[in-house]
Length: 147
Image (cartoon, rainbow, N blue to C red):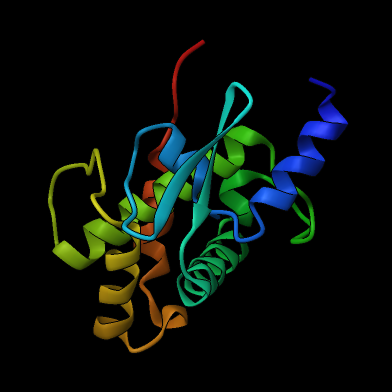
């Protein structure tokens, strides 16, 4: 399949894409608002809810802003590499889970990203009030797979 045709069809089929797609595909989390679909021999994930996608977008924007030093980029508009984006998503979600649940040990898998974000909003009243220093520790600690 032609890559340009694939991307165009993918974007048409997936207008409300999952912002934590990399994290879900890598098996680090699940989400009650995500739905998988197949296109040709590939798989994609879309979000079932506009408000859920908006919450995820807000969280990722805040994580992106606060993790500039850790991920070693200067411009906030700069696109992240796959490994940086995965590190941001997985580390951010693990850090959020650890901060909310007051866990001592490392988090390996987060059951539901949507529920976790809603719990964070309930506990901290807004996503911009999260303890970002705790979240940044988990982003810094996440290393991904070895080559």
